Image (cartoon, rainbow, N blue to C red; front, side, top):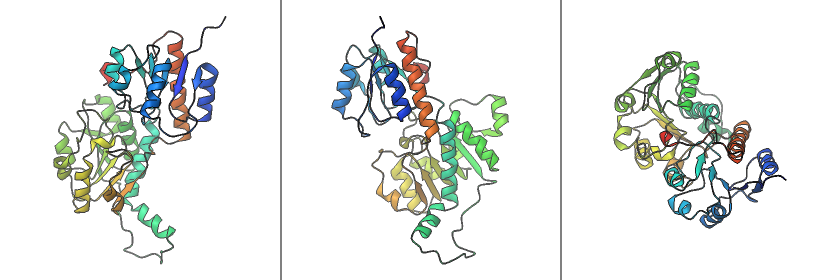
Length: 328
């Protein structure tokens, strides 16, 4: 007689192939619409399921975890970032947490380059002109931007994504610099032709473009604060595809508005969907709706990792992508 299947609750709509495979393997409750669950709905799910499959739009804090049912034994996050989950509290309750690392690396690095080019080459301005039917023909001084070849790129956070950005930047002829909690191994640094800066402040003062690729932790909250933004050259550009909380958004607006920074390309925001209206009004800013990992291939791979984590757990083993204390 087959053993009872795990009860799994999925908090958002996932790609059809992923939902179908989950349904084949487990007793799954899928989301009918693609809106985030309310706190009450999340609590109901956590009190009735063996496994919860949340996304970054779900805040799984200590209060919710404290009220979770005894059945809940795994939070299999659909995504790599886990700052929306109180992993420590989950661990004290005997609840494992897994994620989907490595899947979005190449997609996010592509978006870094897209934002970099979008800002420096004034692509949104040109696009708006064409869409409005306002183009009157080519002119020698129209829409002048800057080439990125030969420019210095400072990468803040040299993990998987930071290194993927470095490889792309070298292909564009940029000089790669980086600041990281730990210096890369010599062979990796050499392969990337990257210059390490122990001092973030010293690196920022010398860069033409700064790419934020570090996670959001208590240590990185407002890491790019007003003082550090002031260190950057007025001709410099900042790009952020990691977490919005890493940049003090109000300080960034002040410097952009005052001409003390040349531009910004942002895919993430300090207050989530509540974007600063002043950012939307600045011509030297490119804003995207958290599209960094939005490829069909990436979303399917994320789902496959979730399935592997849940299936491995169901078979009595530790999920391969379990989040451990040393990772936090």
